[in-house]
Length: 402
Image (cartoon, rainbow, N blue to C red; front, side, top):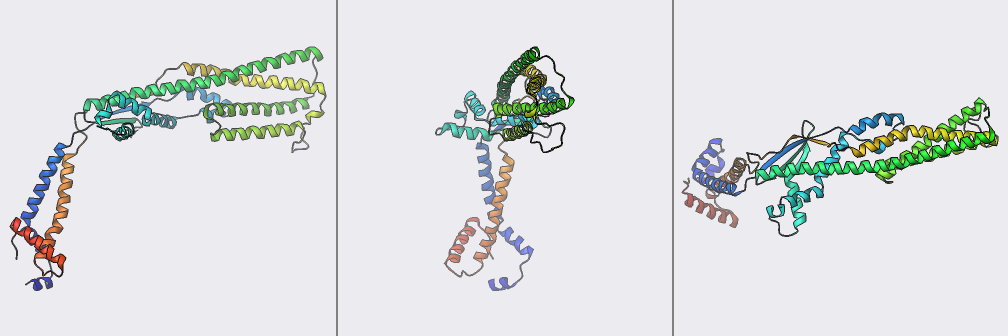
């Protein structure tokens, strides 16, 4: 009989016939799995997710300094430039910092909540950061969320994190503004002192030698030379500013330092009359000019440079003073976190259905394997053991056999 079955072509109805004979096996097993899974899902504690949205405010300092930066050729755009992307990165850095996490863990006693006994700090930080999430939503707002067993606590943690975020950002802004103001103040004081010295030198020179009529050609040469000196002073200011605020390791510092060296080389070449354009009427060999004329134009050049620098350092200094006094928050709360009414997890229906279909996927091959095993002659010890096993299953579930 078994030989006839093996030679006969198996159809879809044959599979249905096998499933109908073994339906009790399938139903009982799936019922047991379903009941156990349902019981386990009800033992899993429910967790709630509270969410808040905050908006990053545009920094007014960028707009106020924008015109100044254009006037000085973008000197400070590299050192102090920034936009919404930088603000987002900074706020994300605050939210992901261990300082923020440890404040929340301490405030809400999360070590006890996570029931951690060993390596409390590291394990609690890891567990907390798995529940505490933040990212940009579709509207460009920062969405901050927390998952917790207590819905009120989840909302309280999110709101507390937003308060701390505002404090940390404000402290950073004040510290940064103070550092910027101190740097600009030193440059401004130095500029004022050098301007006064240049004015005194000019006054002494005029008293000593009187007023000289300088040829127009020499005036043009020194004007061009003074322009290069002015550019050098601005580049040195840019380089020192980047060094003070971002450190010598910053790539912008290396670029600014290279520009300073190139300008110095060019100025030295002009001083020695080594300009590439030999027939130029602008760049002259300064060392061959009469001593008195050279001294006069050096004093005039210094005075011109310091006066030009004052046009930038004075408004920069006034702006720095205002920035240091500002207390405008960088973020605005759009949606404050409230205790959620619906649980976030566990997804009981999803878990039960997933386990149900997994059990079905496992049991179906067992049915067809069992049917085959009891209806063929075993060829080896493994098939003999398999046949005895499925024979017991058939007796246990009272499955009809051919």
